[in-house]
Figure 1 (cartoon, rainbow, N blue to C red):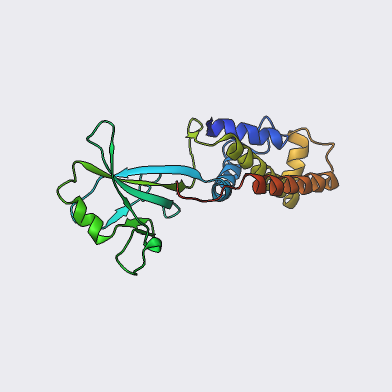
Figure 2: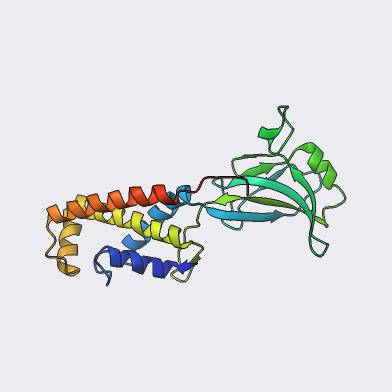
Length: 226
């Protein structure tokens, strides 16, 4: 399942009892609620990630996540690294590159990831020499969700992840109303919520927090080799 940035903002406005966006506007507050929810949900239910890197002769370090961000992403969590031959049909598996943590020796023994860069062991890099146009370095793992800026941007959220973003954004939105009396007054009048008292708002916030805690625990995905 996937949803657009605009559709996600509409869902959040609805659960905040502001379907017309008169208080939580589509241009300002609703995007901030989405931006707060995506990283939080990404820690619990991260996006599945796969990237093919073109080998460069004698190069040890490769920047990961350039498709997500031009500067790469330090929040990617690589789980598996392999070498494949992309010129065959179907593609042929060549070798698995062990992570450094699985090797019995320290140093240049397996792949490592630091500050956005995947570092391959020297023996793997030497084995790629002469096959740069034939082989690909394939990386599997988990990645954060990108932050959209256009209503038409599609977010690759599963049903449970999308629901989690909505639930977290609801908590954040109600908390904003609770801490900002001017915003709360605007929400009461402009959004047609004059029947909601400060005490009623506090009760909604408490229930929303409880709902978020229960739901986030239920959907948490354990990281494992892909």
